[in-house]
Image (cartoon, rainbow, N blue to C red; front, side):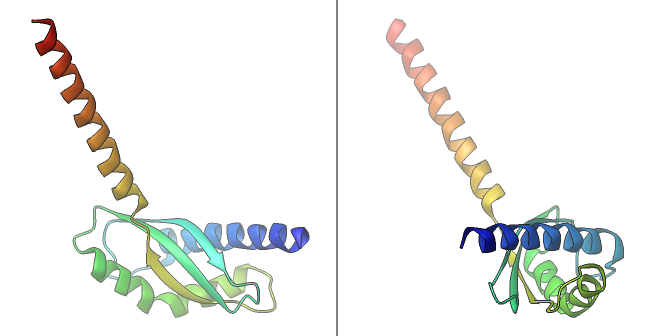
Length: 126
């Protein structure tokens, strides 16, 4: 079982690298705006399907960009099939990864809490 896990990890990393390259350098779609980064790839063990998690920064419309990526999934799959040597190339589904947005929100809450604590300490000293 461990051997299969390592293999899937390598396959996912290879897909991540190739899909990132294709999106950055080969994809030209006016619906895709902003900076698109592939954060991770999860492939089913039978290699039939792959969820590609993307982070989108500076986009005019995140939903439109995600739909543009989904429309281009056939092209991306074809290009991955040409570069990655596997018997089966998975069907690609793009998923928005909002972990960076959530992380920023958490950082902001922590910063506000610290500032509030400092203000309370300063008031208590007076």
